[in-house]
Image 1 (tube, rainbow, N blue to C red):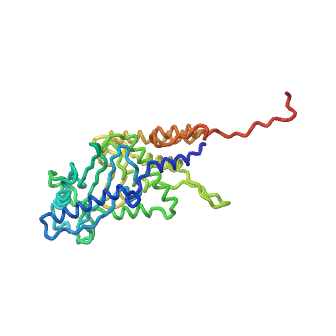
Image 2 (cartoon, helix red, strand yellow):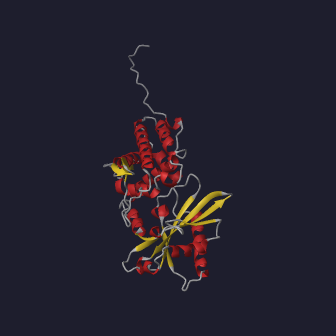
Image 3 (cartoon, rainbow, N blue to C red):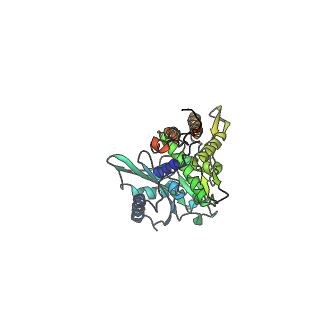
Length: 350
């Protein structure tokens, strides 16, 4: 079996997206938005100016981000207003505060159902966008819960809701999932590998591709560290490819027959472990879910083939086809099998 752990680590370093405190460019972009929001709120005809707390969200907060293939970086920020949802029965009202504060900052600012999105472009191409989720703070609600403002401007009334959300608890769950720091590092690497695979294999946007948070929560539920400890010197060696194989296999085993869209079909259900506790993949159609399963199976088969390869170059070539050009293929001279020279008996005939 070829040892490709060094190539896995190189791949991880190539795709890893640093957190805000490590990434100066994205941190600066985030701060520009927040300064604009702060000054914009003060200019609105609101008395008093609503106070809020900033919540780091998404893969940056969880430290599971990957560099986007299309260059369009996604920055997630939570704006938790110090308001009670009962005082604002229309959740669009505080979302409009954010929109009105930021509109005109770039060419495109939109109210999406779960957030307000600010788009940035460079030379006409998407560069990054900032998703600002709007919350009602737990300290201002009688039940002590956090609520997310959901709905678009022209949504039907029943689609404009305050939905219970406990995103801070989700961040803490992910951060504290493993006590062993090295186990936690492998956990985050495995998530990043599968996220990059998803970006490479699902070029389309929308619900056709499994969303990143779904992969992250699936790992929270079904990933197990893969390591071997040497009893003589107490050193530990991690095997990311083996861990990835077991995780992908676990995901595949959790596809279950369900009745959906009027037919019996196999679907993957991944429930959010905090409020609102919904199935993260519920928006994928049956056909999209089938494609997801088929491509996962192809990934699983390729990993198995790679594990059986003796030559690391051949193993990495198989993995490169699943993960894209950032997965390194070593030079043949670096992977040539070192075999012991044949021993010739002194009594052998000439």
